[in-house]
Picture 1 (cartoon, rainbow, N blue to C red):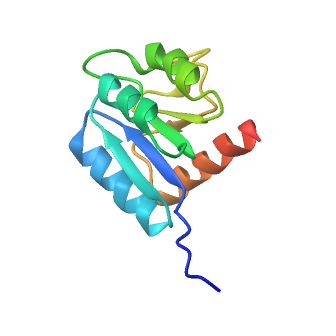
Picture 2 (cartoon, one colour):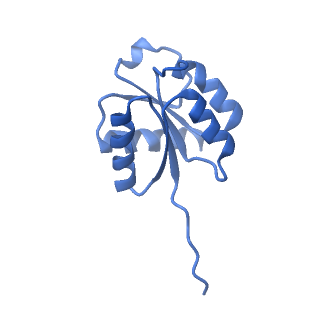
Picture 3 (cartoon, rainbow, N blue to C red):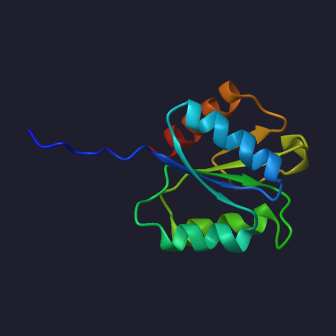
Length: 126
């Protein structure tokens, strides 16, 4: 039987705060995921457009330096319509009604809440 490498499910984290990206990466990697990071909307869209494999999900910050995460959701859907989006914010979900993401993740979050949000988002797209 040949040795085959099975790629880990990869999550794209789009957040302008380096600390949030680093902590999310560590939490996700400890949970068995691969992680790609983007510091703004443009880099996130470029990662989606150039990905050799599709992402399991996108964790997207509401506030980015180059555009709102809310503006980015339709662009993400246009590039990767099957990829679930987890919208993340320090504000309560009530402050972003009709956001269009598959699920919402309040900041600060812990590993359990992050992984639960990913499961909810992927289940919503299944």
